[in-house]
Figure 1 (cartoon, rainbow, N blue to C red):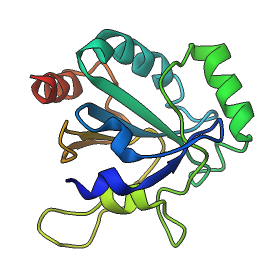
Figure 2 (tube, rainbow, N blue to C red; figure 1 turned 45 degrees about the horizontal axis):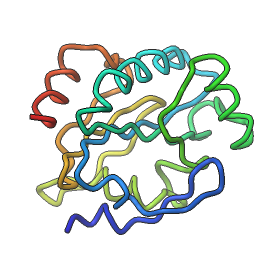
Figure 3 (cartoon, rainbow, N blue to C red; figure 1 turned 135 degrees about the horizontal axis):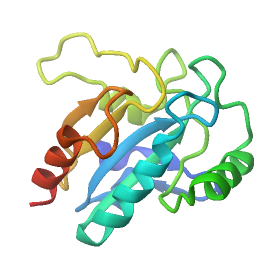
Length: 161
């Protein structure tokens, strides 16, 4: 079993589960923010989710306020913003740190390197990690990679095959 699956999560509605709720599905984990130049990617993420959800695809949005203070709202305010402005239907976690001393355990695991070298920090909002159906980190995409990019779609198609 993947070490990712035992990591506890708190969702923005206060419910709790572990990452194992996504077992058997390909998952795109994205640290998100409401006041970022990349915030418009919510639209593309929602389109991606709508297109591939029935094939076993999930997105987990992880709101984070560590980059330029661009996610100051409460979990309820973040959820409302995402619904009202982008129709987001994929799950959002509670606001979390994706790097530093208070880094969420999910991100501690996602940023590990296969060769055991020093983990690479998340650089900015909307960085994306693609996790396979069996909990393996398949790919990492920087913020500028759009949800509808050939690079991301190709990796997702392969993960769902």
